Length: 348
Ligand code: NAI
Image (tube, rainbow, N blue to C red; front, side, top):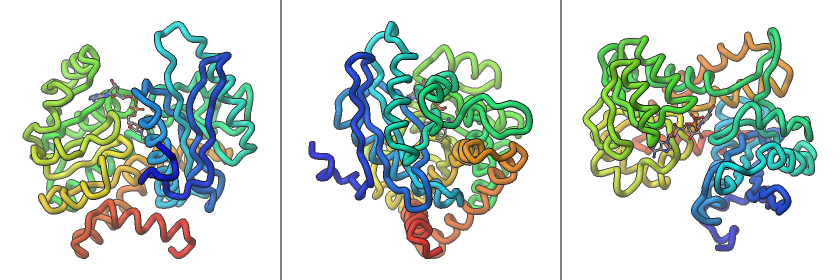
C-alpha cells in the first residue's frame, strides 16, 4: 500500500516511520495538522496484524485528533503515534519507550505525546526521560496531569446524559446502557452510570474483567460480539474502533450511540446509514475529548481546577452538533467534520 494512495491520507503534514531494531520499536508518528499549534495525541501500542492496519490507524487517529482538539477549543493540532507491540511479554519495555522518546524528541515539539490504548503513565515517564514533549505524567498538588482516562470517562458520561435527555427525552435513571470495553474508560463510565441509576449490559474480550464488573454493578454480561446487537436504549463503545460497520449496522437496536472509543464508524458513510435508521450518533471525537483536555492543561502548566469545567462544557457542543444534524437532515459525523475543518481553517 502506498500511504498517499490510501483513502485515509488527508494531506497529513508528516508521517514519520519508527524503526529501531535494537529495541524492537516499529511504528509511525502521524502529524496530521499543526495549524492550531503542536500536534497533540496519544501513543497506541497494539498488536496489529499487518502494516496496512497500523498505517491506517495512525492516519485516521491523527486526523481525529486534529478535529477533536479543534472542536474542544484547544490551541493544538492533531497527531498520533502507533507502535507495533513486540510479540510476547519479555521485551524490554523501558528500552522501547526510551527509543520512542528519542523519536518524539527528534520532531522538536511538532508532536506532543501521551497515553492511549496499550500505554501507561509509567511509559510516559520513560518517554519523559528523553524528551519534554510528553504529558499524561504524575503531577503534584494543584497542577493538572496524570492519567487522562477519568476525565475521558466523565466527558463521555456527561455527553450520554445530555444526548439522551435532549435528543431522546430519556433520563439515564432506568435507561439500559450497553458498554463494550471495560478498560480505563469503560470501567469508570460503568461506575458513573450505575451511580446515576442506569441498567448496565457489559462486555469485554477479557471475560474475567467483564465478570468482575458485572458482579460489582449487578450488570448483565454478554459476549463482546453479542453486545452490539442487544436490545438496549444506548450503546457506549469503549473498546477499539470500527464497531459500526456493514456487518453490525443492520442488527443495531439502539436509539443512541455515545461512547469513548475512537473511530467508532468503520467508514464515514456509516454515519448516514445510522441517521437513516433513526439512530442518534454522537461523534466520538467530540464525546471523548476529556482526556486530551487534561493532557493539554498539563502540558501548558495549568491547574487541575480548570479542567473539570472544560470537560463539563463538552455536552453543550455535542448537543448543538446533534441539533444541527437533526434540522439539516445530515449525518452528525459529517456536521462535526465540517465544523472542525472550519475551526482549523480559522473560519469559526
Ligand atoms: P483500555 O486498553 O484501558 O481498555 C480497552 C478495553 O477494551 C480492554 O479492557 C480490552 O480488553 C477491551 N476490548 C478490546 N477489544 C474489544 C472488543 N472487540 N470487544 C470488547 N472489549 C474489547 O483503553 P481505554 O483507555 O479504556 O480506551 C478505550 C477507548 O477509548 C479506545 O478506543 C481509546 O482510543 C479511546 N480513548 C481513550 C482515552 C483515554 O483517556 N483513555 C481518550 C480518548 C479516547
